[in-house]
Length: 500
Image (cartoon, rainbow, N blue to C red; front, side, top):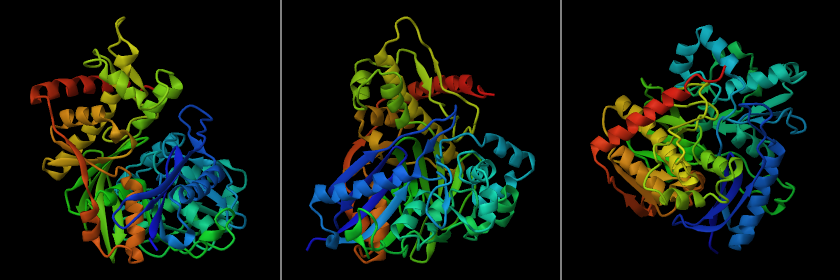
């Protein structure tokens, strides 16, 4: 009987379930979108129960799609949108508030106070992060401060916190396991990435009780089993959950970036560039963050990361906000209909700018518009903006590590765009390497789970599975590359510190 590993890929806009065989091939997949809530400018929320339901439905739909029975599932791996914060009742599993999404900027003032109180150096030294509303810690504080009775209940041990992986694990195990993995823990701004424990000084500064926090475990290992009687998933009872990683770390693993200096970029809702830095954490001089890549076989590996808040979400804005396209792939058709953006530059700082700027108050800006500007020019500017933001990250990362990348491995939904990948190769001046399976986030979670139960024997199995679909090489010279990048940097300056 053929066996498979099930990967749950819980993202910012959808929940997916994908079955992988031993060669890394896909044998059944399903995806369900869920609602995004924007209660105020710069606020982003999800309904945790809707996330749970969409993930459960995706599992059953993927089983049906692949004709896969529960007895064929060797293990379950989970990968997730990181930093997004859920607080729920320990007794009932009911959330006390909507999930506050990683993109949400409501806690900017809390961050400013932490900086004013002199915590920046401590946070950077111990967590590898910068103080920013992006991370989970200030979101927890906001919920405890703004939901009636929440702080008192948390201090009595009645409330639990988790990122989305923890939320899913808790529900799938029937409340028996309250855990996260090292990679997700390292994104909370509460976790000491060298000592592998929660940081008491930051917890105290934010008033977060230790009893709320999950146990942090290695990324490949025991996270319990699916409990009997889980509604809609009764047949899965007893299947081990044995791999967990935040989405970007899972993609790094799925891309087989196991050697120090190898890097990947994921083109999803945001863009996330990550480089393996080996078994020692390094601190950036250029606004990047240090993070745990994964815990495996008794070792912890680290990574440098830069984040772009809005990438694929800009294409979605073009579709849903402006109505210029009816489906995401149409952006390529429009963009390819013009030789360039006609001088138009879009800085998609809808929720501020991430690395290397870390400007919570930047806002979306479009410059260079003339009477001759068309929808096609705007579409091309959208693709350009994604590539330019990644160029910002690569420039910062190369300066930190002191060498030039030889190639960039790519994945994620928008990486299927040949036009975008060619623009990216042009702007970086290096080869862009796209694998046959671009679902590397889910694949990484599957690999971590499968390694724990012996489905794959080791990292060599995974490296042998990776197949290259296409390599994009630069087609412009250094002078033109520099001219375009200088124009982009001028546009970025126009967007900075716009909001109060």
